[in-house]
Image 1 (cartoon, rainbow, N blue to C red):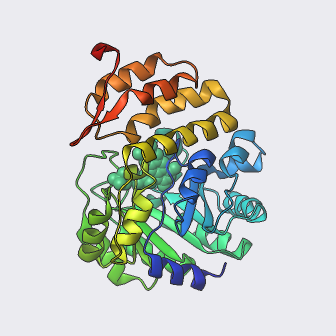
Image 2: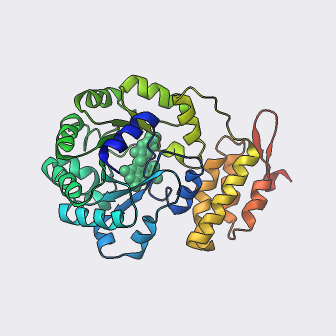
Image 3: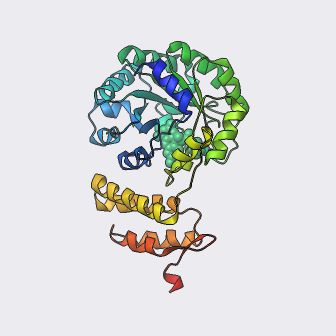
Length: 333
Ligand SMILES: Cc1cc2nc3c(=O)[nH]c(=O)nc-3n(C[C@H](O)[C@H](O)[C@H](O)COP(=O)(O)O)c2cc1C
């Protein structure tokens, strides 16, 4: 895909889905694809590990068929390695490459990768230039406001990254102190959107369609990217797409949530095997039913579940009432 086509579709659809390590894996992207997002991105994958043919990395970049454009997020700090990794994933059918410049995990930043790249502006630009020279695909960058609140350089760095070839800039509107509870700074996103010609994507604190509308208005960004709001909630895709195009949106009912959650479980079992699938479901399932009463009890009972066949039984205990869904766990019998 040409960068200009990517930019056109991004400006039209105004939605980019996030890389979420541990969550936007192949099974969940299979679910998400059914909701027709314009773009779908893998979890971050380490460029070095990909070059070493690491099986887990190959698993991460397995792409999902569908009408969406598939992106891969690369994490790394060596331009040549990033360029070679980009060639590998391009060969696998990837249609755009995102460069991680926002991850704050110590194992990432201690190698000068992720948000550390925001402190190494020349290197960050060399990475973008090396990838754009190596593959004929749009390259995007995902940044924070800065590596720390004392070094908020996203506006100037974005300009340099665009000069180096970046086709779009995503900004997680927090600095690199890791605290997800910190408020999102929309004014810096707005300044960046005004300072660069390419689409800017606003990220941070978007959990529903109304958030998406407000953040677009407040930042003049071209598009939005939800984050944690996507976990256990693929319906955020049609919700945001319809709110941003003034269409009606009907939220899922309880049975639809149960059906998709069970489909997610099946996909996890096929992809990872039962043991790992059940462990993953322990953290994912409560997100599908986050507004349910007695969620704490549901989470507790879920910790006792060891086989996939127990999970439908647990879901049967979630019942709808006129006003809300209720988990009627063991304590209710
Ligand atoms: C569990 C989890 C995993 C994440 N994994 C990645 C990742 O692989 N790459 C990345 O650039 N950001 C990652 N992020 C950051 C999100 O993409 C997003 O920028 C952040 O959650 C802010 O949006 P929110 O406030 O709506 O959650 C991750 C965040 C969470 C909570």
